Image (cartoon, rainbow, N blue to C red; front, side, top):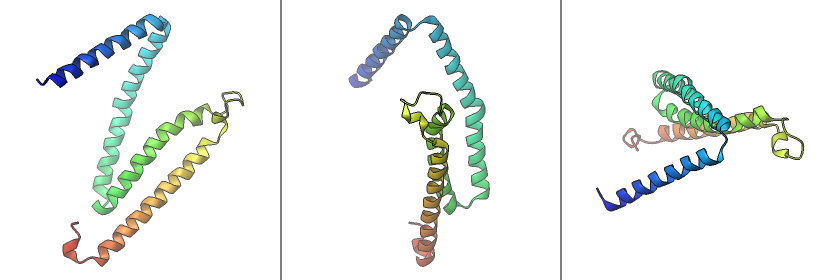
Length: 144
């Protein structure tokens, strides 16, 4: 092995040990148990719900959407999923804090719908531009 890989491995193990030490020495036991339950639940939700759903959507897209349109739809769905994951906690926490914390007073649900609409429109425009461009190119140039 190269020396830099060994150095990185040692640094990673040292940081891991430091993090475990800090968790065990500074966090109450009850909070560690809550963290363990949360991590286990996140693993189950990911492996039992999210992953099969993503594979299923990918299979449906592959089966029913033509190749040219599928790439634009896939990119739009990925962007929408990333934005939704960030926005959902804000939607559920809205109104749970005092007005001094104005961040949670915004209407994130309406904003999410607006952003999803913008992403859909931009994707459709890009797809339309690609379709028009493909029609104007000679057949030999379509592979580019």
